[in-house]
Image (cartoon, rainbow, N blue to C red; front, side, top):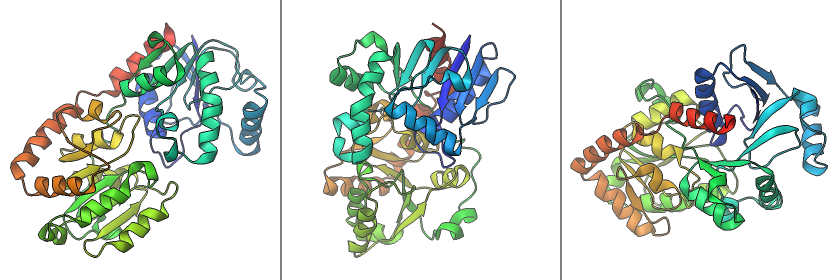
Length: 363
């Protein structure tokens, strides 16, 4: 069988979807050497006689994107040839002749919390996702919470939507000690860690305010590290830091896998007060390193954290501050969460998810 996959969504600085696709496709290719794969875009780490990569660059990429977006023509077969199945990985489809079409809708932020989506992206998603979903034979999403939202907002039948969980995105035994990155990021103290793109949905302002309110002795002892690239409306986060009178907040910018692994491995606490997540990979990664974790109790995050994290209300700054202080002062609870987190993280597997995706593609 010839399986086409849209891999254009994977930039070099991978976050979210790029991480998901790189890991699940790598696992798929390790499992399946019988079917032929055609990748339209990034080749990831794909190797093998059964894998063909069709890279689009420069004016060719922009030209086809324009034609597909506004004219829904020509079929992508002109670029990659015949396919039996095609897997669209970025919310919307584009024209292609294929017997079966699978569409990935990883989250529904644009429907549930539209204020957290840039206007240009919001307009595009609201205009195009539903029609793509109707044309698809199967929709894949990454949490049961997202599945429920898709059913609710689009009125699609339950059997049309399949859930495939991501897994840990970093290898927890390949990190460096803190000294190797301390100078690079100006790390001086034990620290509380947040990982994610700097954008309104991640609720970093609340985290900064909660951090500034923790017990005075703890504030002197612990820094807050925000590891992530700039998204949109990020200036408001930097302005929030200027307003706090005590404490030290460090922005690392985008951190590569090696540095990110070290940041997780040496963190005293991980806090993730996001307003909404399609899945929440940083929470899973933190648990895999045995970092005691506090995260929001909304959207998909309880599916990820289970009983291995402490849940917070992302709208209650004062209570979040108390939870942070209490956990930093409670070594017994920290050790419990370390054990529970590592155990919980092992329940998620790229190999298991890849096998499930192969089954969906081949049926």
